[in-house]
Image (tube, rainbow, N blue to C red):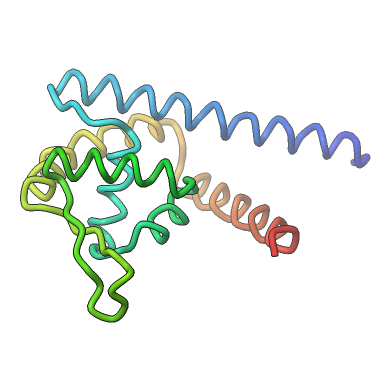
Amino acid sequence: MQPDQKSELVIEFCQSIFELRYKLRKMFQVQLKEAGISISFEILEIMKQLRNHNGLNQQELADMLFKDKSSMTYLIDNMVKGGLVSRKEDEKDRRNKLILLSDKANELIKQLAPIASRCYLALAKDITDEDIKVGIQTLSKMNDSLATFLV
């Protein structure tokens, strides 16, 4: 395959990733609205990360979600106002604030679990487990190839 052809394929692949994220976000928004849950997709992503790693600081969350620190501040401030998280001083570094899920957030996560499961299963209904594994491997290789440029 010629370099230009490969480049065009990569462009198309990346565009498909952007389209997938956009449509997935829209699907979640529709499902959340139908369930009467008024949180944004971004807050949902933060809650997912905190469910897996409760007690992260704001910069760690921003890095995991590929968001800038100011956007993360805005989102976390809204989550604090909504009673979904609290900030706690890090005992190891008092300048650092850890973000912790509240009981309200943990209850909401239980309510969201079947919605998220339905969304992801609908997304992959015509895709085999092997296709998904190959896709993960492909994206992992592409991310690894970019790592040298981001140092």
